[in-house]
Length: 183
Ligand SMILES: [Zn+2]
Image (cartoon, rainbow, N blue to C red):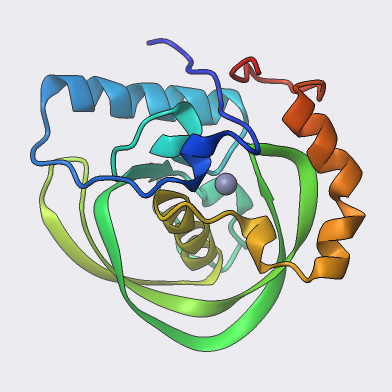
């Protein structure tokens, strides 16, 4: 299974909305396997299709390594054509990062619970509520499918703090431990 290069900040594909897939073809299945391979190789907890240059409405995640001891674990999960039906609970600020914006982290406030409708890895329809760390990763990855990045939530001041980093990533000069798409 090949490891796919990760698309980084300012690539237009990260700003495009994705398209739902019609069914789970062998090509899509093998693409999903590649997404997992790519995510694990880069020590990510989630990866959305646009981050590897695809406009499919798919993200994969395995948030278990980052879960608190008392939190439920889920193992690897695939979300195909996801829709967030409802966001619930208090908004909680927490540090986030993104494989497409290497070595930049900042606090983002997100609701603590989400109700998601999606198709799983077998293309079966699911309606499930998630909370805690998993709900945060789902919201971050779902945003990718809508062309939204976590830095969009930051204040103008906080964004200015990251300006130098963003410029370096945009110019293709940032070192990463995983392959990125050349600029
Ligand atoms: Zn991300």
